[in-house]
Every structure is written in C-alpha cells, then in structure tokens.
Image (cartoon, rainbow, N blue to C red):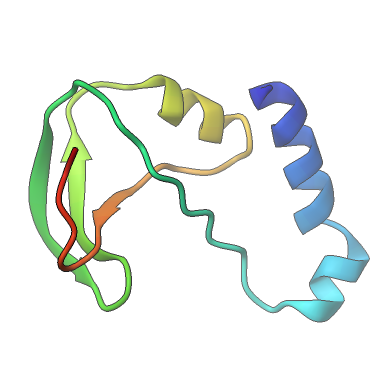
Length: 82
C-alpha cells in the first residue's frame, strides 16, 4: 500500500487544484504503536505535544518515505503511551 498511497499523495499535493486551495503542505497524524523505545527530545509543539525519536528505521518510516515524507513522533499533553 505504501507505493500506491505514495503515488496518490504525490498526485494530490502536486495538483493545480491543491496548490490553488492550500498554501502549505498537509500534516498527517496517525496513532502508532510499536515495541521500540522512543526517546524524548526537547522539542515541544504547541498542539502536537512533545516530540520523541526512535533509534531504528521502522516500517512506518518506510511507508511515509514512499510518500516523500519524513516521520516525526509526538505525544500530546495529557496522553499516555500504550
């Protein structure tokens, strides 16, 4: 699915219609669960929360890489990890 979604996403964001309606790239938010360890960074986004990093490349990274995106992990204030 990553290849298909990647092509659809690129088609969308590169379309004249999208560019006419939006002046910024979209943000895609997903809930991700993995057994890997995440490390808290000092970066805190006002809406998305504290940013975390992982040490290993994951399937999530690969999936979004196919769409031309880079994965970043955030945990909103008041939430807890599974």
